[in-house]
Amino acid sequence: MNTESRIRDVVATKYWHRLDDGRVQCDLCPRFCKLHEGQRGLCFVRACQDGAIVLTTYGRSSGYCIDPIEKKPLNHFLPGTPVLSFGTAGCNLACKFCQNWDISKSREFDTLADEAMPETIAHAARELKCRSVAFTYNDPVIFHEYAIDVARACREEGIKTVAVTAGYVCPEPREEFYRHMDAANVDLKAFTERFYKKITGSRLRPVLETLEYIKHHTRVWLETTTLLIPGENDSDEELDEMTRWVVGHLGPDVPMHFTAFHPDWKMMNVPPTPFETLVRARDIAKGNGVRYAYTGNVHDLEGESTYCHHCGQRVIGRDWYVLSEWHLDAQGRCEYCGTPCAGVFEAAPGDWGAKRVPVRLRDFAAHAG
Image (cartoon, rainbow, N blue to C red; front, top):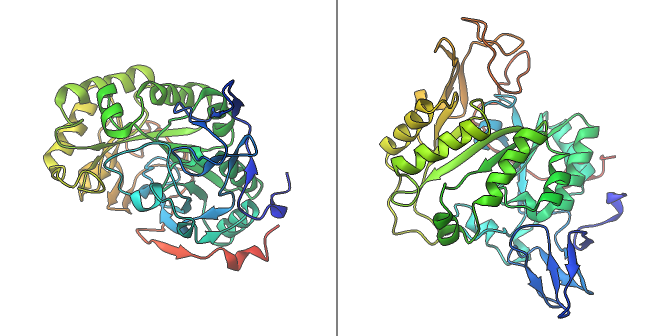
C-alpha cells in the first residue's frame, strides 16, 4: 500500500457489512454502529459514504509530542526512553470522566491541525531518537488503518509501537491490530458491568477478552491502568475481585497502574481520589499476587518505583517520570539476587527524564522515505 500517495482524509475500511434495511453496520468495535448514508459512528471518525464504512481522518492528528514512556504509563517497556506520541479526534467510548475530552469528544476537524503520513512519522521518530511511537490521547482502535500503517513503517525503521487503549474492539480487527504492536497499556476502567454501562457507555466483557487475547495470543508487552473514581470503582471488594482476576487470567507479571481521578468533563461534582485510596489499591493488588503494582497521577516515590518480587529490593527508582535508581543487569535481572524482572529492557536505561516536547512533523515530511 503506497501511503505517501494518500494525502489524509478518507480511506476504505473492511470491518463492516450491509444490513437488509439499507444501513451499513460497522464491525470494528462492539458498539456496532448502524449508519445511514452520510452518518458518522459514535467515534466520529468512521462514517458511511457511498454505502461503505470509511475512515475520514487518515493521516491527520491533534498534534505530536515527545513524552517519557513512563507517561503512557509503561514502567516495564524500555524505561527512561522517549516516545513520539500522537492521537486523532473522537473515541468509541463515552466516558463521563474523560481527561482528554477536548480531543476524544471533538467533533471539529480543526482539532486535527497536524498531518503526517506513516513514513514521515517513522522517519521523525528515528531522527528524534525516539525508541517508540505511541498511539495515545484518544483510542487507536478507531483509526485502525492509520495506526497499522504507521506501525508497519516504524517496524521498517526499527522503531517500536505502543497502543494506549480501552481495549474495546472486536476479535477479527483486534487480531490484525495487535499483530503490528509491540506494547499496550489497556484501561481496565473498572470491574463491574454497571460501571462500564453507566459511566463509559460500553461493556466490560469485551475488554477482558482483549486483555486475555493480548497476554496469551500475542508477543505484545502488556500493562493495565485503572483510574480510581471515589464511590464508583474504588471499593475493597471490587479491587480485590479485579486484581484476583488479573493474576488468575493474565498472570502475576502484568503491571497494574492505579491512578488518581481529577474532576473533569461530566464528573466535575466528584472529588479527587484520596492518596490513601491509591495506596490501598496497590496493597490489595500486591496481597493478591500482583508483582508490579503502581500508583499514578500523584507523587509517590514508593508507589512509582519497581521492586524485585523475590528479594524486595528496589530495582528501578522513579521520581515522577525521572529514573532515580537502576539495579537491573544487562539481561534485566535484579542485581541483588539475580531474579529476572518481567519486561522489555535494554542493557542500560534511557535518560530522557520528564521532558515533554511538542514537535511539528511537517519539517520531516520532505526527507521521509
